[in-house]
Length: 179
Image (cartoon, rainbow, N blue to C red; front, side, top):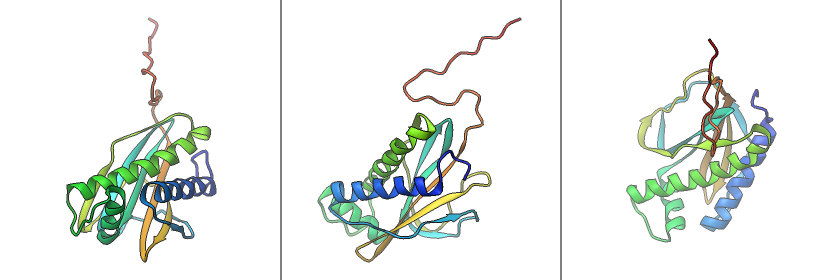
């Protein structure tokens, strides 16, 4: 992986972030499964996918995908309420869990990759949909099992092609040319 971090380092960050969020915020245990790397076009999916962008000297996307049943379970544990169907609260809860997990991964990666910014999460819910990132990208997929359900945490990173990458907390420098 041309990301400045190895697959193993990235998976270690994903495992630590997911374990922390699940035990602390949800009161659940997510058991990590062997990771894999995916380079092929995604197949149609059902359920809930939450995506969040990463930007800096490295750019990419982090995502969480799970079944509707697991999205309801996550939401019920996070919000301490019972949910029987997907609604705005469920989608917001999945987005918040994504923000916490990928945010913790981002923090762990910044030591090697430099400052990174996060976008706001986008949540997709439905049947027979496909998500895609432009370009030939390598996704590191870290599956987890929790109470009979599966959740995948995926991260795709690549060096930024911008000469002036986003630096969170700092204004972009102005380039002054000479004549």
